[in-house]
Image 1: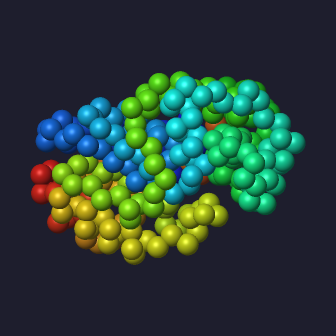
Image 2 (image 1 turned 90 degrees about the vertical axis):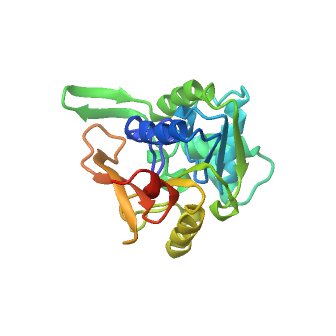
Length: 257
């Protein structure tokens, strides 16, 4: 989300891909929009559709999004000590802490939003092309999510594996874990072959777009842009984000490029 930052966050490219998605929804009078990898909600919060559904396999993320979208408050401040204490509780499988609270600490206070295996995002000074500036990463993420919350109030959030999402006559946007990139602990065994087969199947009667860096040969790239992948202003890590669609799917048939 950068908003909550995490691997694959779409906050940097939402302004480019949302118009592509929205045009398809409007052109075809689509009433249902699905995101099986809703992540930080940085795309779904900008989509206008009669019904919006966001799901993710991380129950702490969904609990956090449900919490803020229903007016819940976020923790005011997070120290390294609190972060380490909650991470230890999480690793021990503690069930005496609300899921949203673990999500609050685990996403907003982890470096680059990489859940607890990313380490604590300590505030401090960073160099920019205009000099140094102070960054409190937790407070930035907190403010962004609080501002975002009002745009999520009517989204139906649920804990699901993507394969449990079975839309029909809808628009589906997928932002899965990226192949050949550093993954969260809970996504390191992601079956990419199974995922692309799922996309082929649901593309038959849905308009489907997928964010990735690369895709199988039977998928078309309809958009691409190089973006930074670092939370630091001087970060040099970049990648070319792309949007793909199945070349025999409904989207490819309607929007031939």
